[in-house]
Image (cartoon, rainbow, N blue to C red):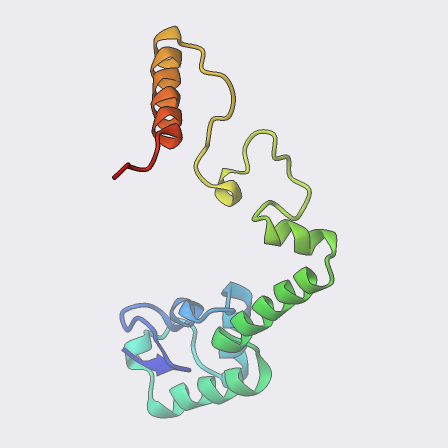
Length: 147
């Protein structure tokens, strides 16, 4: 497995797809990098020479923001939005969608598992819930043990 900027890329894939395993490099950027490095995109990653790997690595490090630096930049941007208390920062802080999507229904990815709030419709479940609440109230009101 060739290693580029601290990431092992799969050896059995074509290089144009293998370098997309780097965070921040997509299909268009991968083709552009290979074109500038003068490497055949159809070449398998295992067939790369050390010169090819070093050419790709220097090109990426000098001209593009990828991996840890890109993650750090994105985290800083979100922290900045939260610090200035703008709308997007508040939505990030509350883990809600930032880009205007509805939240009355859906938005489960950001909000997490659904939590039902409100009255219990089934009478038997209502009685069980009421008896549990009474038991907790009685335990709290009882003296803490006399000597």
